[in-house]
Length: 462
Image 1 (cartoon, rainbow, N blue to C red):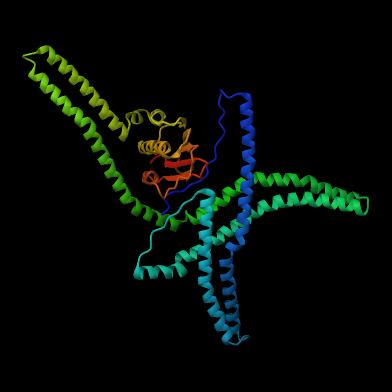
Image 2 (cartoon, rainbow, N blue to C red; image 1 turned 30 degrees about the vertical axis):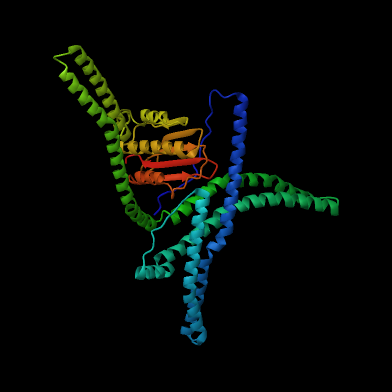
C-alpha cells in the first residue's frame, strides 16, 4: 500500500504590509540565499542520480551481454562454425544463472531508489505482509523470476537512463563551464610563463572559454531544480505510479482502509453518544424536572412557577446551543451555506496556535470536496496543537487547474519540531483514509526540527 506520498512544495514569498524596510530587505536577501542553496542541493541530487545511473543499468546490461553471447554462440553452432561442446552448456548455465542475479540486483536498485525518494521527497511506501507455507514459497519464486522482478529490471533501466540524461546534462554544463575557466586560466598562465607571449588565435580561444564558462555554470545551477523535478517525475511514475502498481495499491488501500474506516465510524459514533449523554441528555433531564416543579406550583405559587418556567427556557436555549456544537463538529452549517471561505476562519479560531489563512478559490468545489478539505484542516490543526510545539501555522486553500480534473489543494504548514511519522500515528492514517476515499492524495514533508508541511490534493468534483 502507498498511503502517503510526501513532497516538498514550492512556496512564494508573501510580503507583509507592516514590515519595516530593513526587515523586508533582509528577508529578500535571505530568500535569494535560500534559492541558490536550493539550486546547489539540486545539483548534488543530480550528481547522485548520475553516479547511481551506471549501477542501475547493470541488471539490464548483464542480461543483454549474457543473452547476446548465448544467441551468438547458438547461431554459430547452428551454422556449424562452432562445435556444440561443453562451452555451450556452460554459457547456457551462466545465462540462466544471470537471470536471478540480474533480477535481485534490480530489486536492490529499486529498493535503493525508493529509499532515496523517501530521503529526498518524503515518499513512504508500505507493503502487504507475506503469507505462510506454500504461498510464501510461491511468492519467493515470484520474487526472483516473477512479473515484479522483471518489472524491477525495466524500472532500474528507465531510472538509470534518466539519471544519465538529467544528471549528465547538469554535470556537463557545470563541469565544462568551471573546467573551462580553470583550464583557460591555467593555459594562459602556462603559456605566458614558458614563451612570454600569446598568439592571437590562442588568446581568442582562451578568452572565449573564459567568457563562456561562468554563464554555463549559472545555466547549470539555474536548470538544476527543473531537472530534479523531471528526475523525480520519472522516478515517481516508474516506481509508484505504473499501471500495475496503481492497481495493486488500490486493492491494498481498499483492504487496509476498510477496517480503519469501520473503526473510525464506530469511534465517532461513541464520541457523539458520549457528548449527547454527558451534555444534552443531562440538560434535558434537568429541563424535564424543572418543568415538573413548575407544573406542581402553578396553583399554589404562580410567581415561583413563572420563575421555574423562565429557568426552563434558559435550559432549553443551553441545550440548543450544545446540540448545535455537536452538529458543528460533524458538518458546520457555515460550510454548507457559505463554503470554505467562511468555514476555515471558524476552524482557525478554535486553534490555540496562531493561524494564517490564505484562501484562493474562484468558485466553490463540490460539497464532498469541501467536507473533506474542512476535515483535513481541522484534524491537521488539532495535530499541530497537540504534537508540533509550533508557534505559527499557515493554512492555504487553492485551486490547481489541470487538463483533466482540477484539484482542491489544502496545505497546512507549521514551524514546529517536525518528525511526523505517518506509520506511527492514527491521526495521519485517518486523514489519509478520508482523502483517499475520494481518490485524493496526502503529502507529508516533516524533517526533524524543520516543521511539517501537510498537503492534501482533493479532486475538485469529488
